[in-house]
Length: 139
Image 1 (tube, rainbow, N blue to C red):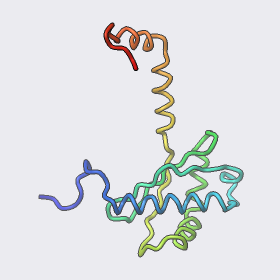
Image 2 (spheres, helix red, strand yellow):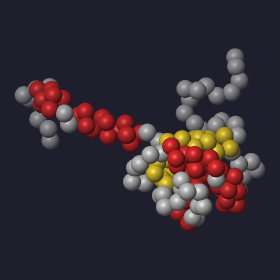
Image 3 (cartoon, rainbow, N blue to C red):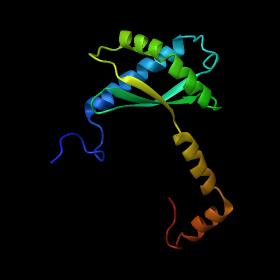
């Protein structure tokens, strides 16, 4: 039987706690710091989630620029300032080793908006109304 975590298992309490600690630290850095990088100047960044790997060597950081916009230049800017971010986070969090940060765009808001627009289409709304039976009243 192979050792290690099965990919289908949810993350453990420790991984969730470490992810939240890193997320809060990153949010504090993004709130207080001004970056010299032109891609990050005057851009507010929201950290939606941090998922550390089971061995805590890497952490995927999901970000969304506040107010929308193109995330590609923001991700490139974050790659350039990653050493600075790691140094600031290491000052804020008590860990033996700080995970390597990998930044990614969070697309869950786009997916939720797409589902909402699909549900509000006239064809779908018509089907939802016809699916209710006469005895099924909404309360």
